[in-house]
Image (tube, rainbow, N blue to C red; front, side, top):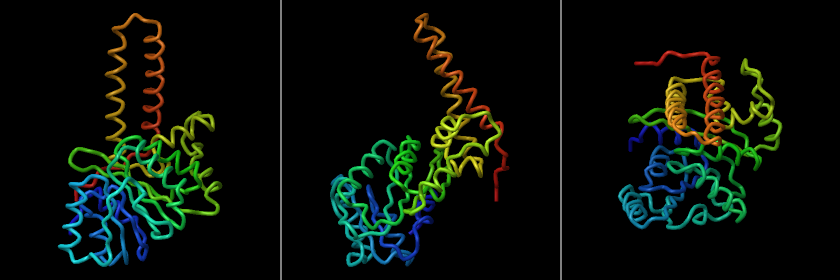
Length: 259
């Protein structure tokens, strides 16, 4: 089975030998691939919606993986039993929903024994990073990929006894040649990705140039309003745009590869 660039990036982070659970698995392509590749001994594919759940069951049966890949219908981490999995992957949903799934699962003990999380939010990446930081997960690596005109960020987090110290160092924005308070630096890295800013790739510049374009469009539209609150919001937008521009200007640029 051949995966998309996005799912391949997720699969690459899963540690060989780990039992995995894919939450919001859709057609179960990711766990099928990982089992067929011999990377995982067993897996759980969790899917809430009936249509994709039935499609996943068929795909697993056609692949002859019923003995090693359990397809379960349910909401979030409710499909997983505590201690059943070493790795959890969640891909293709918003950061707010992803954070809620992780937090509910944590409270229900579903993350007990889980050693790694591989997460690909479509939007709201900072919400996921903040949850990982607050709950003692170390953000070990990140990547950013562009596929079919869309840009995706993938995060690999691990359980670590020294996660607090390692995260404090990771989210220290002093490596950026900018005048930033500790709080401002941390917020910036939460938003844009601490690893992504340290090793910037072409897709990172593409993403944030696009975000700047959206902010500028909103900034111009606000100029049509005479309300004092609109003027204050417009000023905040300008400050945000200036800060993002400063960050992009200070990053070392890399040339895209066309090989």
